[in-house]
Amino acid sequence: MSFYVYLLLGFLGGIPAGMGMGGGTVTIPLLVLFGGVPQKLAQAANLFAFLPMSLSALKLHADNGLLKTQGIWQVVVPAALLSAPAAFLAALLPGEALGKLFGGFLIALALITFTAQKNA
Image (cartoon, rainbow, N blue to C red; front, side, top):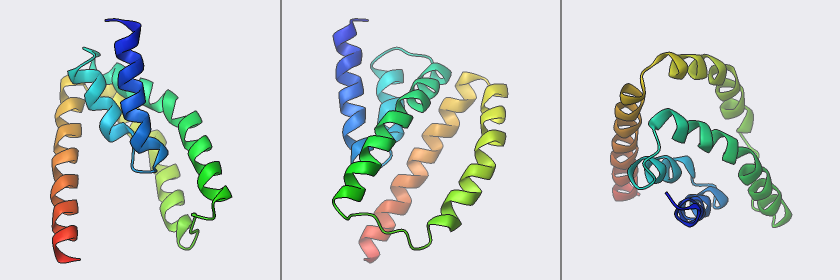
């Protein structure tokens, strides 16, 4: 696969990441479906890319006064505590199972989002 194809896939995944909308939900499927990257490698690449993208997006949003920190610890603490056990679980699961779980997660997320928008 050409460097330019991966560059384009990274660009397309970086746009929602910079907006704070979860770039991994776009980046991982792009890498797997269009980049031919195995699921585990796509998830690992997303984790590495997440650090600089999230830090730069966080700074930009903070500089523009767009961050609301009320209730942040109720999200940060459980996420931090569960991230290591989830990473160990992901390491134990075969790539095919991770792909199916991630696909199911995306479908559930789409349904929840659709329902929330309909009721708003």
